[in-house]
Amino acid sequence: MSGQSQHKPTDFDVIVVVSGSPVPAHVKSNQTLEHLVRDALKESGNVGQPPADWELRTQSGALLPQSQRAADAGLHEGETLFLNPRAGAGG
Image (tube, rainbow, N blue to C red; front, top):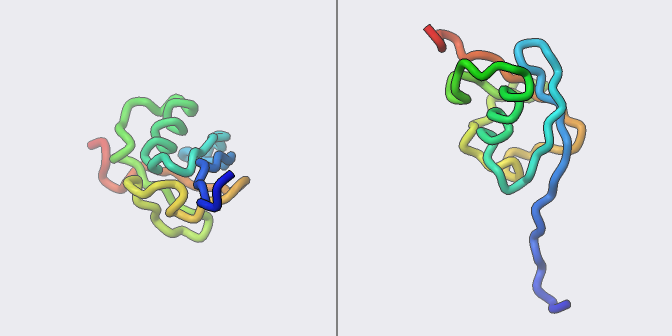
């Protein structure tokens, strides 16, 4: 190997609580959080609303922008995230 550092995508698992129901999800660090939201909604059967109508938050309540890459969001293995409909969405 050369002396150059290579960044391999880091994959890990999180729990996304979708409207109160925990859904295991696999995260690839180079994907956007919107991809994670889309997967969690599909797995939970909530396919009636687009990811933009949902808010993804950390356990401490911090809002995570869905345009952010998972690697940049500081997520880690086993973390629990919360996905709930945005206030006023879907009306």
